[in-house]
Length: 385
Image (cartoon, rainbow, N blue to C red; front, side, top):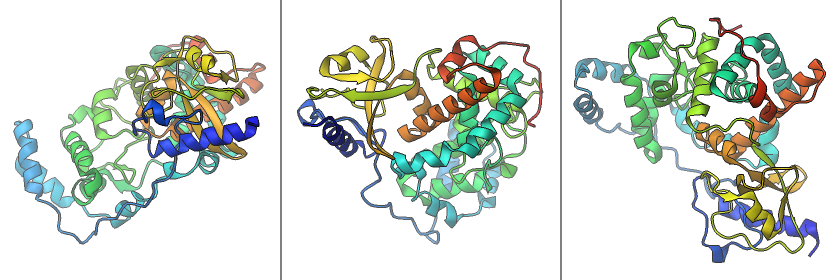
């Protein structure tokens, strides 16, 4: 079989497995040598709940919250919920996520000349702080920059909705994920005062309730937010030290491995064997060593430690089907957003920013290089540019 046709069949099989990042892989018997996970759009769009529908009993939510946190004032919580406004546009936005696109359409949104140039400029302006934060947490500086670039265009677009409106709308009017958003609403309402720069009702964020430059959900802010500038609060909107440290802390806490590759193209040999279950990307931390793939006829395009755990991901690229080996740090990026397309976009944007920054400095680098030897000057307090 011609190599190109084999790659097409393999990628098509992976796409069929994908559905979403968390779909379990099929049994080994169903995984032919064309079986790697590729993200694909849902078969049909979800139904948008009516904005006019009566909300479930918010009083039950308040009772459960106060029972779990006896120090809360039930009347105050009830009053806050009553201040929230149902937002039909949020319900509509939940039906058209960018991550449902194929890679060929998703990539240009986030990896383009404008975003790369803005990332290079941001990195140059704040290099001392970015490098120091990256070194402290053991993560690449250009990955930090790229995450902020993909999330909010380097702080330019942090969201126009009141966070309270978003979480109440989704928690009580969006049944498919009501439990998740009620959990995040509970996290928001129980954040200590030093976790926030303003009152709960004044916070603004995305349509899903994500906040600040790094777009943390309330539970992430509670768990990973860092007061890096020492002013007694965590400010993800206006304190660049807090923003960078919180983002880096999130990656480090999820197991970032310094100096390791994130992904690399994969090439199936003419006689590549079928992939056993567990070797295709299925939204889980890679567990099979790269050498196991090589033994089956799947070769990485770049030199990688054969003992490094890997998974195989299929994509619909601009020039046709693509295969990628993905590694543990790729999985860490999917803890930020479960879409493999998101993780790949962050990785490629980081590499482009690193390359252009290095060109200006007279040397070639990658995001993996940056993790190993970024300089560490004193972390001085500062504000966003």
